Length: 287
Picture 1: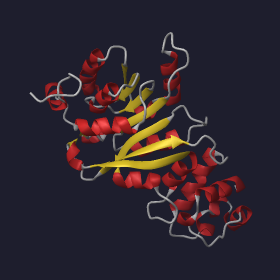
Picture 2: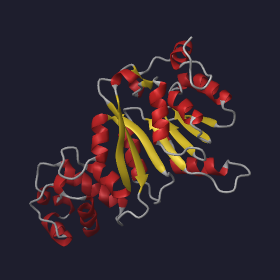
Picture 3: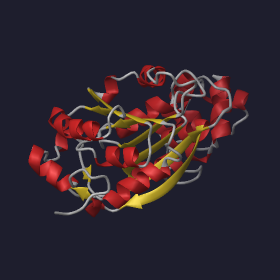
Picture 4: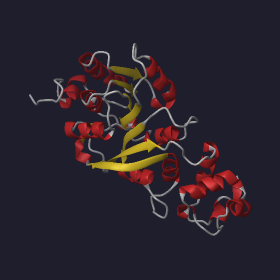
């Protein structure tokens, strides 16, 4: 019998006992390496007073790491009902600290969830930060990140996000202008957060191993990002990078073309990937 860090059975046994083969349709790759789940939990910062929101816990490897690293409370959203029994065992092992919500993350109101989680702490004055920590299912990861970066209220409901993506997506999140990976994700992340790569995770750490390397990205919200209308910025970046090889006067034609660029003081012959976040904000405010 292989040992585990928290007195719960090893994940391989849990997966076998509950018949949890990862489903491709759900973008699942289960992370079984306890050293790595612990490393992700530690990358999220101090968890002792935190409420952690986790998406796609699967059999609960990262969930267990978050709890054993002291997270006061974990709220985990899991779409795959097959995993609920395994998560219930983790919940029983950490009484009152794990809440599992059976549902689809794309249909979840995270801000409401965060304020509920904070209100639930009975008898505590004030509540700790909300941190999002997740090995995101591949098929919804980018979509969720964009939603979290573009929430209406800022500063947002979370104090930080520590998320795992395929490496090429992670590179797009932390990309700087003038690099191949720089695009809409890099602008949105760079505008509202400070994002950095934490570490890479090799395919063999997962079951089943994906074809690519994964990376953990840590994002902390900027308290005062440059003022811009979030929906407009989304439209501007979409237009600009929708035809990234073309000059801006062509790619942002639908938004006002040369006249718009002139108002923003940006040379119409430049291409989208050469613009800094600040220039994108100027362009947005000129729309």
